[in-house]
Length: 479
Image 1 (cartoon, helix red, strand yellow):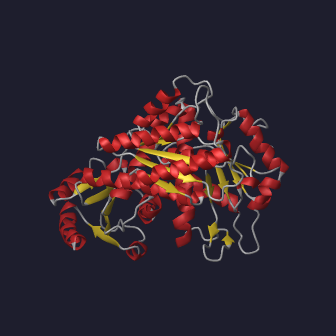
Image 2 (cartoon, rainbow, N blue to C red):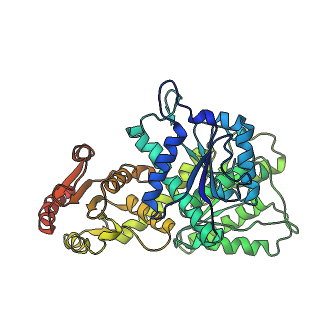
């Protein structure tokens, strides 16, 4: 698919106006950093444009745009022109919301947003003080707070944008994404209408982090053999998620149970069968807090669920806020990844981060580390960009120590890799990194004092110097 504009950033003019406290044009600065991130992700130069409220430079139909990035704020929502831009694009792409990536410059409730934007994952680009609740915009984009949140959100946004554009330009259908990673499959059961937005949010977030989600098609009233379809999907999954709301839900033809009840019952049966076969299967059941106006049938269904969970291992019942539930899902999935990583690496692992052009150069360094008794994790450079990104994140979660190998990579590349190591907890890493080092030719390590302050060991020289320094470094590492 040929595009005039790859990424169009739409914003309210007031959000790009310098404030009294800062001379920074916020949206312009956001575009600048997004362009920088995208150059780290892909070698292709993407066409990115800004479109203010009354900008007439782009096609009024917006049918020449790949993906849209609306910068949401209260002023944006109040602007008729801004909302018209988003709705025009939404209609031009046949209401395909997978081509819209909403950035929130300031907090907005779901109710503040139009219906078609609510289910979309947001990229929050503001500072929230958890103690005072105060909201502040970023003015120093290289502060510690910015590196922990703003940059991390930009990294996620960049990879998601590149993935969407790749599918768009190469004609890869959305369902094919589930086969990219040979990854864990999660069953997200149907919900009643009152939780459809929340289910969509959970589904998109799982997909965004590299998981396949079943069912991958809608279940309807007249779907034949619905029990068989649900069982077949669940057989592919090691985790099922069930979200229970105010309503008992819709009942398919010929059944005495609703879709919600039916899927829960079949998943419960699978849990019993998995235990008998000594297989791993987990159910996470979320009951929305503060339920109101529920009828007697729904009350009995919830009571049945609670009794069932008490009697069955591998099932967990939660009545928490949605954000807490999302965190619990992440914990469950990440623990599985860590168990797999430990099994694959045999224990202590060192992640050797290097540039694509240094693949041949690093081979003797990899051999040397392995001869010292460690398993070496390396970046992936083949396959889909999303697959490469997922492998990088898995390495960040699994490593015990890391070495950044600066060969042909430029100084900004080193900075980005150092940032990734700092942000590893945000990718789901639970334990601290034991040791970090940077290896380069003499005089080639940039920002030495800054890297030392981040607890990086600086190693300079050739392979012989590397071997001597590595042995001393590994002694400290093991102790």
